Structures are given as C-alpha cells and as structure tokens.
Image (cartoon, rainbow, N blue to C red; front, top):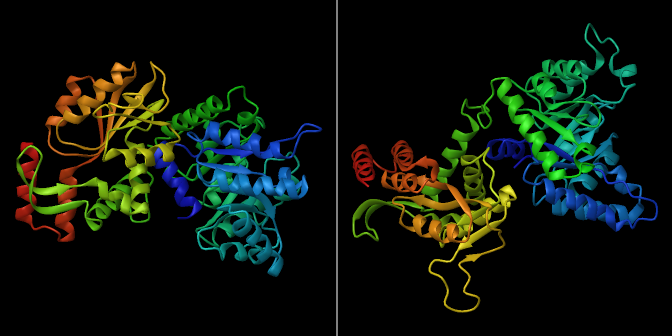
Length: 471
C-alpha cells in the first residue's frame, strides 16, 4: 500500500491528515540516545491524531552514527503507528540518487521522502523505482527569502507554480511541498497541480493556521492536504491535546468548505467508505466468513446463511481493512478504552486498538473462578468512556451481559460498534439500554453484493432478506 493510500485510510478511518514533525533538539551534554526517547514519546502521545510522522534527518545526522542509529530505530517503531515521511530534501542523479533512495527506503525503512526537483526528473526516478514509495518535491517553501528564486516569472506564472505542474505530471506517487503559512502560494500550487498531495509545513509556530491552509489547498474531493505541525505540538505542555486540537480544527475546516470526511472520490467515482465496504464484503465471501446453505443457530432456528467473522484473522489485509471500518463507524467520538466482547471480537478489537492507538480492555464472560477473579481484563479507571465492540449483532444478549460487567466497574458505555447488523432486535435492545449502535453495514448489503457476484440467485437473495427482516 502506498504512502498516499495510507493517508486516505487515515482520513477515512480517523478524520485526520495531520503530519507530526519529529525534530528533537538536544540540550548541551544530553545523551544522543535521548533523540530516540524524545521522538518516540511524541509518537506515542500523538498517534491517535497523526496520519503520518516526519522526522527531519538533519537532527539525527548531526550526531553521527549514534544519531543515525536512533533515526533508524525511530522510523521502524514509529511505522507501527503511522507511515513515516523522511524529511531529507535530497537531490542528485544516477548512482548517487540510487544510493540516497536505498538509504531512505531500504536502510531506514521510510515510506516517503522530501526531495529537491532542481536537477529535474533524473533526480526523482531512482526513488520512484521503489514500488510503494512516494516523494514530495519542493515547490513553494515557507522560508522568508524563498521568493528570490521561486517567484521568478516563468511565462506569466511564478516559477514555483511551473515547477509544481511539471513535477505533478511525472507520477501519481509525486506530492509537492507548499507552505501552509502562505495561502496565496498554496492556492497557486493547488491550481497548478489539482490532484496532487500537498505537504504544508509552517502550521503553528511559523504562523500558518489550518483553516486558511485547508481553504487554499484542499482538493476538489476534500483531501490532498497534509498540514505539518512540529514545534507547535512537540513544545506544547500536552502534545496529545495540541495534536487533537489541530485535528479538530482540520475537521471544522473540512466542513467549512463543504467536504465530508471519508467521502473522497476514488478514480472509479466511488467514495472511499463505499470502496472500503465493497472490499470488506468481497473479502468476507472469499475467506468463507459468509456462507449460504442451511445452518442451525444457537437459538434453534434454521438460517439460510451464516456469518462467522472468526475467519477474518486468516487474512491480515482483510483484518486491517476491517479495523479501518470499525474506526470509521465512530469517527468524531472520544473514547478512553475499547472493550471487545469475547471471543469472536477479541482479535477484531485488538486490530482496532492498534489502528486507532486507543487501549483495549475486555470483560470476562463468564467470570473466572481462579486467580485474581477480575471481571475486566486490562488497565482502566472508573468513569472512563468505553466503546463496546463486537463482530455483529442479531439480538442484544451477549452485549447486555458485557454491558452489565463494564458498568459494574464504573465505566461509561454508551456506544456499540459492530461490523454487521442483522435483523432489528439488536438495535432495539441497545436503545433500551441507552446504547447507540454503530454498524459498518447491514447484512442486506452483503446479500445484494452476493447477488451481483453470482454467489446467490435472486430467489435466494429475497429469501435471505425475508429471514433477516424477521430476526
């Protein structure tokens, strides 16, 4: 998956396109190892709100081999939270450029890198030779005297706009750097490159604000802008709160320009959430999670279909997509913990926890009669808000049991996320307990897809819908 696809996923699942800069500065006498420690603390604090991280290699290279070792470790471990963009601004050709590309993508393991386009496409192709890697080429930068070159007239347009148009034509994996504190320049770059991703430094400490940057630089589909915040987050008393505030500003800005998060249009005219839904439903069929036939349920009823989401773990790619789906169902809501209902939902809740950075707990059902006898596994505090998560819902039986256990521990549970809703009783059961249900899709949508794919015929589809409606 390319860096840009991961950004789309972050916007779809979590409503964020924030790039957090990882540029630690050491105090005199401080150990070089603290480079990694400082940066990694920032990663862990801001992970729920970051779409990507951007370490500037200069702050690590300055400390020799120990600094580079810290950078290599940081890139590897930060990538477990979000993709990493290496800010290196390299520019050379031939074997030298190939060596730089190997260093950035091979040795360090970054997923994207900033480059200078001054030597033309010859300096960029060695980086694009790496299949999933993306590059950001300098167009309009945020330093005060950038205009000496960038504002030169180039046939009626400033040179930076000409550079932006040319570079964007080289590949779909080429993005551009356009100063977030220069709305006029940002708008000019967007006009020159309507479909490109724009990395927008200069937010916060350098005077830029997200609302102005978003209005000037967002694509027609509402995506395509990556605001960069470094010192404004790293130097804040509470970096997590600072990152969260920026993301909330971003979401408000997106709304102000009539854009709905997670509704960016794909090349086939399908919004990203619909594309994700289609990918997951196909995956459920292909992995055998959805079956047709005659199945006796726990209730004793005989169903013409069966859904078993335990098999999702057999396909890591599908599991990752499912985690994004769960995250998208509750985007905009705040939770302190995710509580998976045993047993089918435990791996799903784990995947969602890894995807969102929100810690996980789970209620023991039934309670164990040995050891500590705890009812809820994991760390939590009374009064915290908990998202209850299960694979699907038909009735509320198991959910009500889990709900009682969690509430008995003083936890606030007002929302339930499921991948699939089947029938109507489950929603009624949840509403009676003051719990809002957030399904990713209804099982009827799965029937319609199976009909389209030829997995079932029209008679089977109608039979399954009637059966589901009666539940």
